[in-house]
Amino acid sequence: MAETQTPDGPYDASALSGPTNNGRKKDMPNGLWMKCPSCDEMLYRKVVADNDEVCPKCQQHFRTTGRQRVAQLVDEGTFEELFTEIQPSDPLNFHWQGKKYSDRLAAEQKKTGNTEALICGRAYIKGRRVALAAMAGDFLMGSMGSVLGEKLARTVELATDEMLPLIVVCISGGARMHEGALSLMQMAKTSAALARYDRAGGLYVALLTDPTTGGTTASFAMLGDVIIAEPKALIGFAGPRVIANTIKAELPEGFQRAEFLQTKGFVDLIVHRHELRSELAKLIDFTMPA
Amino acid sequence: MNQTELADVSALGFEKEIAALQQQITELERGALREDKDFSGEIRVMREQYISLLKKTYSELSPWQVVQVSRHPQRPLAKDYIEMIAKNFTELHGDRRFGDDPAIIGGLAKIGTEKVMLITQHKGRDTKEKLKQNFGMPVPEGYRKALRLMKMAEKFNIPIVTLIDTPGAYPGIGSEERGVAEAIAVNLREMSLLEVPVVCVVIGEGGSGGALGIAVGDKIAVMQYAYYSVISPEGCASILWRTGEAAPEAAEALQLTGERLKELGVIDDVIEEPLGGAHRNPSEMGHNLEQYVVKTLRSLKRRKVENLVNDRYKSWRAKGKYTEGK
Ligand SMILES: [Zn+2]
Image 1 (cartoon, protein in one colour):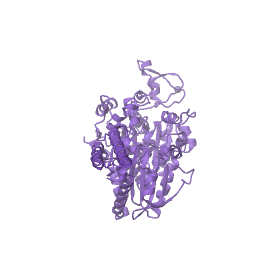
Image 2: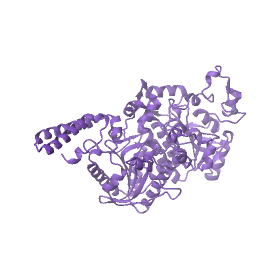
Image 3: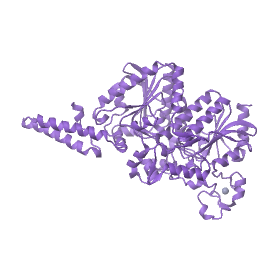
Image 4: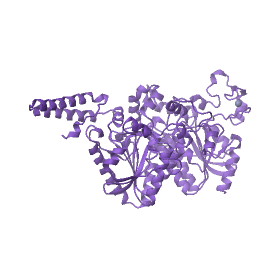
């Protein structure tokens, strides 16, 4: 399940870290221009950034950082970040081929300015108060370790205590190997917290973005009352490469993409990034009006 | 020394010496019979050597060797435990939605004095059975059947016992199309709220989310030479070391043995195995499992339902290692 989970995995890590260049930074050393990997259009970086990291020509949704995601979703200046004091440790003293997990963590913190792969707290979306947790795909592939599980569980508990709508943005390569079975347990821990929130009557909207895979999909990502996906987002449990290797055959066109999941019954809505805020506001007004 | 300890067991790589000694003892015994001679003195000495070698080897197993024992071709599988300890087992089939997954076998049974809903993952013994069981890799229907049976158990106030033994959920097209991730996720959520005692035992391979999908309970145990991991050592090795051949190093790094997982607070108990592993004495292993299940259920059944469910939440909520400071 964890095939896609680290920068060492099959996904190109740079596709998640540098916004939108999809690993092609080398082609454009000045960083002013980028080529859309979908329609090949040469795009001015600033125009793409101002367009919420969506290609203005073909509407391809590029990957964003956790910080960009929060900024796109919330009313400006309303995000109250919480639980930043929860910091990763290296409980297994995990190392491989002369590399150390603790070094990798420090490097990711320095690169992203985040303490971990989840940014969470209270915010307003079009004037509606919400609990928000956004995974940061730019931090170790948005992989789920102990800190992510703990911060998410606390956010869910906060939403339960304060009866706030809960929005979780998913982008993840799955459970983080470097913390072994501790990472795996976070799937059950977060799902148990969501069970209580669910029974208490809270609205949980899961927003699945490209890519959402592995243990993240097989836990909180699939538990939304409403599951929204961004267009063409890859969403699955096993990574496509693992499946292709197992069945020794080509995968069908569009397999594991948001549109495919919707036809199979696992996604409620596919929403353009520009429409997310108003869609969320509408759902909140239907279910948990202030 | 009883017969089973010298059972004809196929040897793992690190057991060559043990197997050679075993072979010598067998030959000496045959020779004694054939030539009508008394080698009992020699045989006794060799058996003692055999026992002490077995003890030494198994007290020093590396994590990778534990993984190998957990996959030993003669290790007892779920069906063996069902035969050994599940009295009046009544298998119940199907998820009532799409199909019946043979990789997950469930039904009503009595273990010792305790009436239970038993839910197991079964890998299959020979090639034909392995194919039928899909090598113990469940598809969505398996998880949904498991949940259906758990809800039924809750309705009739019957405790739940799950036996986990899977390399992982099946990574196939149909499995994804029918929402294996959703099936596992819903189990994680619903199992956390079940109002009956739930005991989960990893009997062989605890392969990531595919294992966890039936392993949320009040007490989680791992057999002494079973493993439980976020990813297979081979998978981890191929990603981080870029070669599956580094699986022994990955097994070490992942800290996937019962003993270590208990120290990390991932699981509650380790169930002791017979000398040299469950495959050398399946009936003793069956007995140990039965003892553990009965003892654990008796203590869980004494709790008030409300406390049981609250304590379960607390125990899962506490899993994870991090630091907290400004
Ligand atoms: Zn484009």
